[in-house]
Length: 145
Image 1 (cartoon, one colour):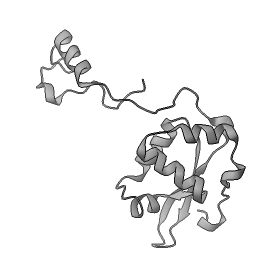
Image 2 (image 1 turned 60 degrees about the vertical axis):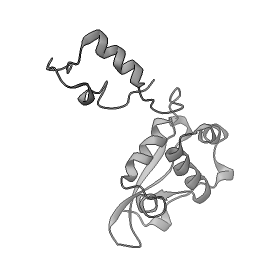
Image 3 (image 1 turned 135 degrees about the vertical axis):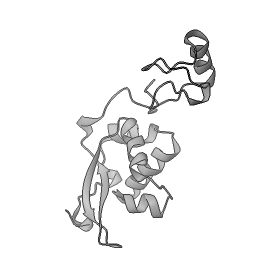
Image 4 (image 1 turned 90 degrees about the horizontal axis):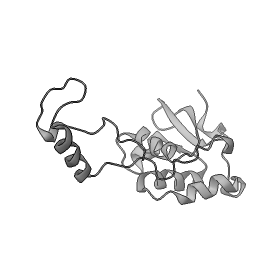
């Protein structure tokens, strides 16, 4: 486990222009907040995501950034506040940018769900069991579009 102060932080001025352009193109609020914090501080921790920004599940905010194709390095560090293990995140290698993920995940519209129900009925796809429409999800995770 690393000491938080010993993690290499890349100043905004030294960030690769391709990575910076990708970072600045992200519009989603939660991902944008993580990106802006790392651009300003060079690092963000789960503790900061929870304490400063009020996220009960900080890894979700980190996943939002990764789903936009931005590479992050996860560092296991000791919290100076609690002495417990936590994760800290910095930008990763620009060669690990995942193209085509700009915008992250998109939710299916309610209209599309209704069209599927009209076409196939209110059945659970794996078991074929009839269910109330409100219990059906198009996918258990919101897929990429």
